[in-house]
Length: 63
Image (tube, rainbow, N blue to C red; front, side, top):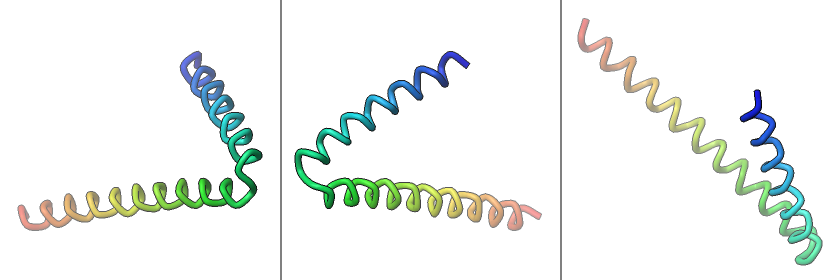
């Protein structure tokens, strides 16, 4: 529980930092940041999917 709260606090700090940076540079930057995060999330999802498929394939070959 305590670890989660600490992580949330860190995330809030990071968000505040991003806000300041975005204000300094303009709104387009914030959108760009968000897009980067989405891309990372998508890559992670695809990677997990690939890993799962490989495991299933190996299990089929064993049978």
